[in-house]
Length: 248
Image (cartoon, rainbow, N blue to C red; front, side, top):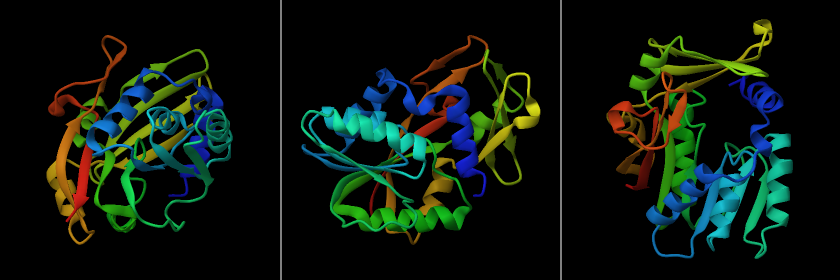
């Protein structure tokens, strides 16, 4: 997992992703949290919150949110969003959620865009921690990358004025590879590597974690031919899905 801090720092340097305004995609994720989370108001833990846009969108819907990330630039932006949340429902922590301790009782624990950083046992350790943070009737919403999309997208490259990106897939380790570099300088490239899980593989991963797969919500996919991201596609076409987990 040595690549993590450098990759996310460089991705922000080249794209400004952590400082982007709250947009429709963030609001849509907040609505999904509310839809799947049970009776409002909810107490939500947002793992790997990035710039805090989704956490703020959740708080704006009337829920209490604890948002956590280890990236300095991301946390600075998330804290700015928290200070302007008019009802003070958003708390931001600068910490590693693989090590930090929380009191349990969250109605929802969500982890969007980042699950699969380590090996299977790293995932299981995190899932056990999540099970301990949930209220008895709580749910975890985990965004999981699909092997079929990334296998099909391997070799695809996108070029913008300031940054370029290439998708690849490690079929042996079953991992997506997402490489970024400043346009014109491929020697400076950084790569993230995340494990991909089909729903059946996720069920196997969940054994002995205290969690069970209750539902799967397909996400979107980047249409390379059209050059657009489609927010909702069938599961067999999706680059990721939201796994709805409950206590086993």
